Image (cartoon, rainbow, N blue to C red; front, top):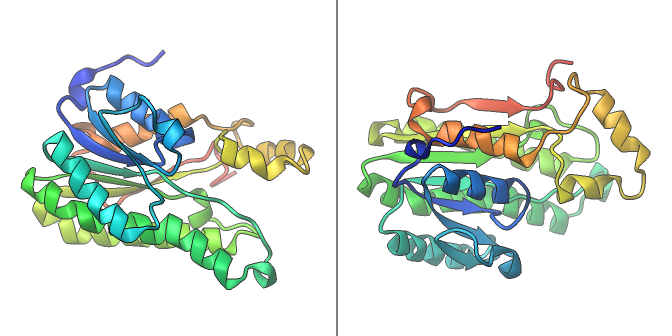
Length: 247
């Protein structure tokens, strides 16, 4: 059982995207338990109901809307101390079937939107005297698989972008790190196996731990990267993959 230590994030004001479900929802719940005040963003207005201290239903690819939402939510919270970009989508297709619209949608959600959110958040983090950015990338950005060209490119780009953030913002006491989950049991990953459920067992067999990870395990890593326990960590790429990175 996790031991709650409210002092870890007490008083911290943090925006979390993808907050209505999956890893994003687990992050909101864990951060709240640790004392943070959360501004939740998700495209699913119904899923946002009742979570966090402030919330905004938004398609994060609406960049003008995203800019306004960051400022509005920061005002509601009285400032901003952190960002967790957990929103993302996964679509699979062979390279020759990955047309321009699919490339754009995946990269707009997984790379462009989090990059722009970070851009909009930096001035608020500076005013707070520093802060943390956690970009939820993917093991797919480090070890790409077939049929995931656009997804792998978007997550690989997010990893590289995070390292640039770390290099540029360290002088402002703003730390930026990338978190790379492997196979995590969420509705998004479950959808990959609807047509071929047996393939899920094949995937699990490739993991040293022989099981899927949980959203709560990712939330624990996001917590570490967002609290003072990781105060000397920036530009890092942390994996949570059940051993698939080396197995």
